[in-house]
Image (cartoon, rainbow, N blue to C red; front, side):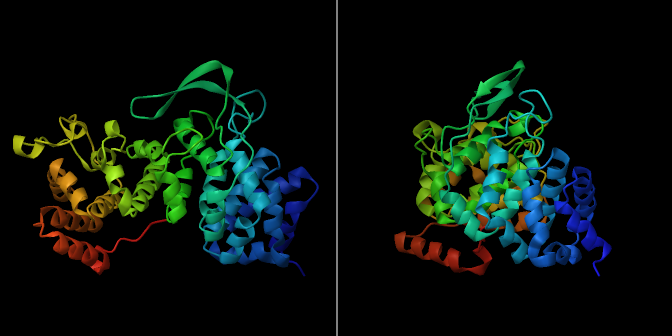
Amino acid sequence: MPTDLEDLISFLHHGNTQIRQVATNHLVTYSSSPSQITLFKHNDLEPLRDLKLLIRDYAQISQDALTIMINLTGCGDAEVLECLSRDEGFVGEVVRKIVDDVGAPAEKGQGDGSANADLCCALLANLVKDDELARRLLKAERGVPPRTKVRVKLKTNERGEVEATKTDEPVSVQISTSKRVLDQLMDVFVKGANNSLNPNANYDYLAYVFADLSKFEDGRRYLLERQEYDGVVPITKLVVFTEHGSLIRRKGIASTIKNCAFEVSKHDYLLGNESEGGVGLLPYLLLPLAGNEEFDAEDSDGMLVELQLLPPDKEREGDDEIVATHLETLLLLGTEKNGRDVMRKVKVYPIVRELHLKREAEGIQEGCVRLVNVLMRDEGGEEEQKHNSIKAKEDDDYKIEEVF
């Protein structure tokens, strides 16, 4: 005899809208408990198949269905994850809701934006934990997003960030001109920050998608190479968010940058000045590590302009994990002598020294010590440098794992 919960879960495909809504609403609570995951595998995964269809249902039902699937895919159950991530039609619908519904009406009217776009971003961030989907997403293409209406005008400021000015009437925009799914997600992420495109969504969770994809060589290649459709290198669009107000966005971008730093052949490009065609990465890594300290002439001579004369209210990044990630990125950038020389030239040491004095978290203390040891050591001959570099990679004390 079916239990009450099995009866409830069978209502996910009921023909009555109100009954479906009650069922999804009640099941949200159960989906957050790993002990209840077998409930959603009932009858050969039938509830999961129902939930995949419900994201096309009315807004509240779709919201609850997405929340349930986010909870379930966060439990680490491979069968559940693969049921969702390997359904190309379902993943395509999730992407469509993120990209194409930017200016779609939430209820009625034009330019109000999809109400569930952020939930779709969070779900996609969980789904790409499946390596098969991640690899598929790196190559996926779809139609160019249709022009859509939003209540903002967009412009790019001097830091490369997209700023939005609200308008009374909807304005027709082209979110992306590329057929590549990654390009479309990148464009929505960059243009949609701070609810710029959609008052109901900020697309911050896409930062975790990029972090996961950057674990793969093809993902890092995408992020570090100029894209044909807009002539821009994607990583340059992302580094501007290291001091963004959203913790989710900052954390995902920090991990993405760190994974890109595993490409040693690209270190000169990452460290190169923006005015000379490089990424100019160091200010974006060091500003989150810096406080409001005043440095003496010896320490500040040669320091990056962005790091000098910081305002009295300048605060360091508050999240210990992000700070530790930036330190690991700097350590990676010091793999070769040229990277170490650049960091010495721009006086990275005084900033790390002050960070070490101010933050007591173990990961930060350890990261500071490792980085200082690399920057302050004597450089031997070419063969010794090569030996040291190899040893640093093999030594467990220096081993850095790719994240997300």
